[in-house]
Length: 398
Image 1 (cartoon, one colour):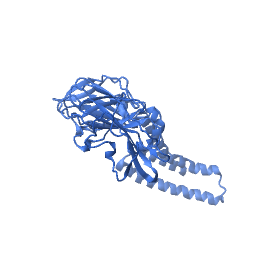
Image 2: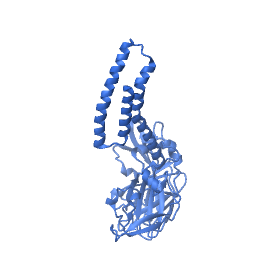
Image 3: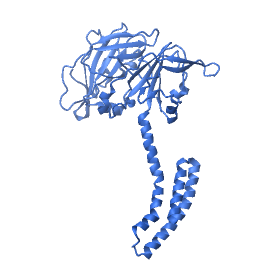
């Protein structure tokens, strides 16, 4: 009888604790500790009495009757939490965190629906129309409520196929001065072939949200979506070192007159990060990372790019990539294959290929193809090797 009452008390308090929070949970804990503690001591005394009376020959079923309900009741909270964790894991697997970058080329200030910004970025609003070189980047954390409302734009790691427009707001953030507009999404997003990286990067095929970013280019009369590989974190990049894999890291030197807002290489969108690819008017902007792409370097690169100033027409160039003349020695490990792109003010582009190589004795070396054929002279801040300390990084033969 005492065991049943104790089990009932444990069950009731366990169920109540699942929904309790803060002070309510603390108060429930104190009450439960008092009641359950008293009943547990009483049950323990009774159990010891029967053990003594029966001289240790109490039937197993009697032990089960006394303690079984209590043990089962005590499992309510851990089992419930385990089930909640499993449900949460399934939800997060089906609705991963999404990365977005927005580029404002409209010439006017823009506000975004807080449901589609994670609701935490209004301190950065509006997105200034007079500063197109400054991008907005955020992460979207879908909730069951947001998914249930149908307002979330993504299904898995892809933009929903039925998303044809995006609601934006212009003007001041005042009800009487803010204008709501529905802007057409004019293109069907083209995604990089991330399945080729699944085994190297450690994700299942089709679950590539951690390495994708959706870039939204806001033009005066429409939006274009350009999914790209995100900027790899250090741990992600480390996984690529020494592996036979199709990722190439691109850097750039902008020797033109305007920052570049959009860049494609062999049809793949590149992620420029939180701001446009700036003009290299100081050495701070030399060898700027301009993204990663899934491709090989055995064919010329086809580049397209747009600057931040209207009319945002595509400029194009076909760029040969030089080859190395030597192979790596045994014991050397190549990191991510890399290319520096030199954008000139005349609209032409040159490529320099380089590799950082881990040498024996924990030393680092770099080999580079040097000044590209047809490029008159090195840029003011030097070529790829200029970004390394020659006292600690060895320049290897081409």
